Length: 239
Image 1 (cartoon, rainbow, N blue to C red):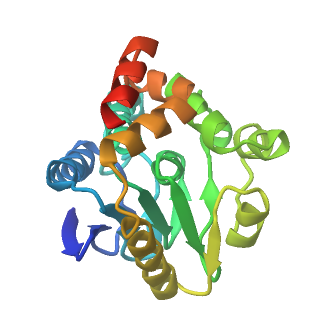
Image 2 (cartoon, one colour; image 1 turned 180 degrees about the vertical axis):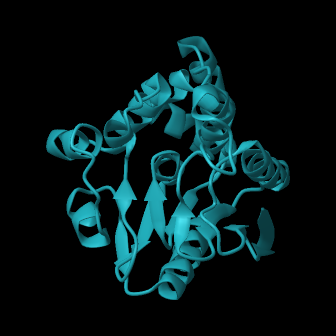
């Protein structure tokens, strides 16, 4: 389902195989276990890269033939929510290497990272719910609003179902870097993660700042923001 490798300060989580990496209970559980291992091993100066093998980064929730019946899609929507929380609260920088198509929940998975790099030669970002007739879950909307800040870009992604290639996604500031191929995308993602890890930031401070930056998104996935008093005490303890 996925593997976890440590390369110096960088943890590399790879969705393995040539399939579509659809997010069913097994894959979500496997990713959550890997992220939990990363969080447990975290020390100042760590970072996470998520990458996928094959043509897909992730083609969304595992619904339909081979997956769960569409009538039970709510089960997977709820199963994905704590994974989004795991990534948004992870005490280190996170980088998604979008090496193939990222659709619906797969697109959301990429958005839960701090940085996104995308290959130019193949793959699209696509929030397909409008086209397949499914409402967007509230926490999807909160994360989309937090990570896609241009109003026209958010409109085109959610209400138009626009399929974004890398160059256009970068213009919309949804991805940070465009690379020519999948291999170069993965390599540049690791390079960026290494640069971030070298800063040796305090993980709990990093996570706290991220949660403060995206309060609505974090609340939507169940992350409880520190109270003002807790923030003051946390700040005072670092002085």
